[in-house]
Amino acid sequence: MDKLLQVDNLVTQFRTAEGKLSAVRGISFSVEKGETLCIVGESGCGKSITSLSIMGLLPSNGEIAEGSITFEGEVLTKKKEEELRQLRGNKMSMIFQEPMTALNPVFTVGYQLREPLVLHQHMTKRQATDKAVDLLEQVGIPDPKKRLKQFPHELSGGMRQRVMIAIALACNPSLLIADEPTTALDVTIQAQILDLIADLKRKMDMGVVFVTHDMGVVAEIADRVMVMYAGEVVEIGEVKEIFNNPQHPYTKGLLASVPNVDDEHHTLESIPGSLPNLNETIEGCRFHPRCPLATDRCKREDPPIFDVMETHQSKCWLQEVNVHDKAATSS
Ligand code: SF4
Ligand code: MG
Image (cartoon, rainbow, N blue to C red):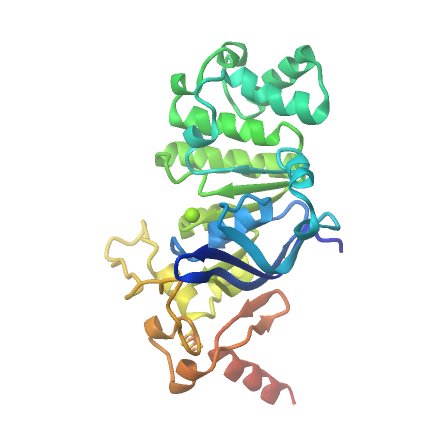
């Protein structure tokens, strides 16, 4: 099957006074049409840098040092800035955590919705206005004609996020990247926005990359889950595999730190320790300083990615034992 997005061995680095630091360390994954892949991990694990790498929106001291990103069969990592700009807001769009930083405060909602339509789809102002009304209706904004004349500060946080989504959807993108789009919103509004994204994904058959640190959100929205730790993918699989049969000690830790609303005696476990700094050298498995199951080998040798199943992988030496067990029982 043709992948919508294919990322191979991506390394993203930043030039700093201390030299080049790798924020993303050779990760590979893919996204298909109509699929939501959640990228999950603590802040600083490389999940936002991964999405900015895909969009070609890295800060000026950042660069893709190795690997390739292929979107609808085209290699993005070979494209010029101008070609990438054509793709952005057209075939791929991104929504951010804080819509106020992405919306321009001096232009009306109507202007900001019409702009991509005039620019990328060559609509007249009249056609773009009609489409803008349509889009606001699609994202559940009442009285859209009135909203078009308003400025971002005149809207609530939830409304602004809906406007951002409407702008992102204006050109029917085939890939939507959402970086913590609901983190700043209260729970009720968050649930509405998640429903909206899921609903639009179904209707438009988009691929969605959804970045979050919240396993509750993952459970709501993911088809597949990619867990990142310190710039690497440590586990990837279908959502039910990750929740029902997590393999990597880090994933288990993340799941244990989700509060269980049905169980009042549940204690909030969190993973002791913190992410390494980008300039820290760690021998062996990058999770070993925090891993309750680390062995001497883990401190020396970096584990490869093992198959748990065809659709499920884990980057942990414990998996090697399981692979051997399976081979032994099947022979
Ligand atoms: Fe823990 Fe070792 Fe697995 Fe790393 S390889 S996650 S240290 S058990
Ligand atoms: Mg982030």
